[in-house]
Image (tube, one colour):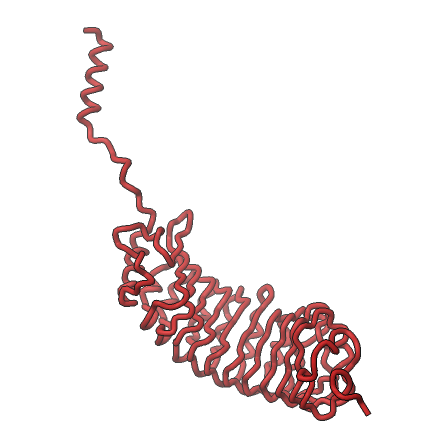
Length: 335
């Protein structure tokens, strides 16, 4: 037998007896710590049906309602919209350190407070806990989430004051606290919301006092302070040089001379001032608001002729009625 054939036979024998690795088993991408945390969250929610795909025998990166990062395979998103959860937010959510987005929306049986364990989520950018039944005070520690960009706690039962620390995150650009039972005044610190196209929703609460003058330093794209008990002069929110698109101040006790108001000309599409104590007249500058689609100054103390031009005559009488002595189209002629 030649040396070549001998080595060929020897190699075949060794190959047949060797234990070769199996390539049939699927490699799990999910991080083990993340998986354990998610299973604890599922248990805390009483094994809710909406989380039925969270099976310990499968890869958690394949589960519904979560998303893994494509590179690190760590859980970066927890997204459970529209029902199915009951009880409080488990503290175990804080054991998902790579979370960037939490979206728990329209969960009418989600109750209790916001757990302090969320402080551990140093990468969190988007926190939406809206249309739920959460209660208690809004925790000031949310302001320590330094990467937060978007905070939405709307449509809950939160009470007490607005923590001044909420605007601490340097990149925060949208704050929604509307439709709660918040009391006290608007913190001047909310003027720190200076991100790109900032949004501020505080409507349908029980806020009192005046709008801080410092808010006039912010060029809000959207600001809604309606349906509160606010007073004083909010005209610092206006300005010809601003790029506000929607301003809602209705159903308060604001008192200022509208004649002196300077509306944004090129950007404003909605201005609602109804049910206040606003006096003076409608400024002629309103005829230069190019894209105005929503306008209401009813139930105030305005006088004088409605300026003719622009889009002002496109609104019907309900946008102007119940004022002291406004006149002109679409109301009765001035005498």
